[in-house]
Image (tube, rainbow, N blue to C red):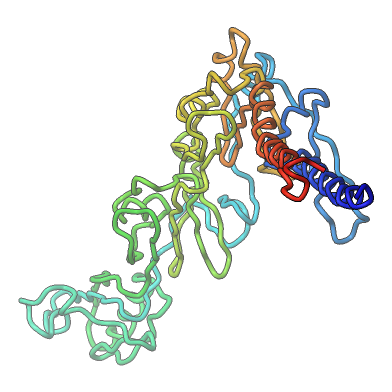
Length: 402
């Protein structure tokens, strides 16, 4: 009988070993939530920068990024950096007047070039039969001369003329030369009655998206937005995309308003597509121990750390550690991490002067006791299971444990 008792005890010891291994695995998995190990940054003061692999370089090695404390000196340095307006540079993603990428300067407006579908009004003085051959009671666009699809017009005594791509002055000279054979000292004038051949497209976050005719009045980016009813409430003034001949440029109208970057107000050409983006890109994220974690949209890309914390309901008093507030910025190849000691008396003054940028992540770390309570809450169900297994009664031995 003693031998049987020993054989039954071994499986029970094996079961306890399995439960113990499960407990250890559960403890090791208690800190796999993103951002849950931010407390480790308190000692090493650095974070790992993910490598950017280059095609013509060797295998990249991750670098460490030093965490910058948010102090008065840092705020002063940032104010000095932004004291001079930084105007956009000529890149593939940004539009400037002198970029040399097919964008014309807004210095001198070119003359309007006639195209198919345009309507011309031709006035020959002292010859009403040539000026209004269809009658004087019709409007200018109805009585005018329409440019054919092949870019030609027909005029009495002159015949067929190719006017596509020419200005009104050039057409006037051509007609005067042709009529000089029949009219002595001919005097005539050529005007545009209707502009129909050239259009631009304005879409996105504007009040009245659609087609806009290009006239003899220069049509710039800002003029096109105004003619489309202006910006909609969700429009991002700094992200207006201009597509021309297969290339897309970013127009920063907000920089035009605030920094005087008038080179952003480029002249539009026929066939251009102007797409006003919404504000979804200008989001910031507030995570960690705050009352209402989540994302929020910046207004005209202006928000401070204090405003972000206030909009998130501020930090929770019973779960957070205000001494460890982080701002993570990864808008470039070299991310930046900032740390604010919220327990200092001047912390909120510094937070109110620290500007955030789109896609910034604000993280408030948890208090040590809260982290311990969370670990205990994960261990407690497993401990209860072990207690219940250890207290199991075995009827084979009269209710006694083997």
